[in-house]
Image 1 (cartoon, rainbow, N blue to C red):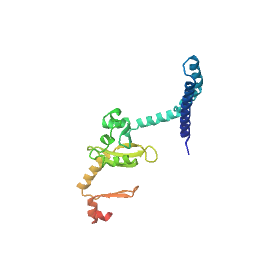
Image 2: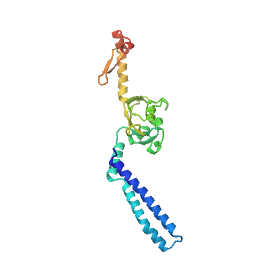
Image 3: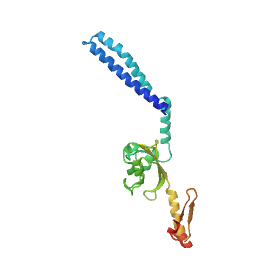
Image 4: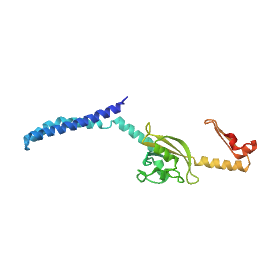
Length: 229
């Protein structure tokens, strides 16, 4: 079912096309009937062109964004700019279309230096290539990607997600970054403590129904890793 906005745009486009046709037809009629230019010719041209110009002006006014549309766009831009986490808008060619201040601070570059540049070069793990990068593959396909952990230059870790900005296979996606470096460092220290004390470790993620164990836990129960599959 067409939305009011779509109907408004169709009406505006039709009026503009009609106005141009009327104006061209008026002009052609005058030129055809008058072989020489005179004051009367110009007056006749002006008289016949007024209806077309009026419709053209009406079409232009209708196509101007409403205050509500302007307000909505400005609000979205303000929200995007004030996000405390890095956010990047990227198209399916892997090019940066927009980035908020948090994202520009992350890479130490101004927005103008990032626009239309490859997102992989600045915001994806450096140890991967665009061909084998999980993020790049989802971007190219225009698909959402749940948040996943990615290692950057040690000790930096980023949790990155991709969300389509429209339904279907979107031409643009929103890439969000969460700094999880502190969490990863804590996990590494915990692993060292467990290994040093020769303690068994079993962690259950009851939300997803998954669990993790270490080798010492398996040895204590006389199990192999394959026994858990």
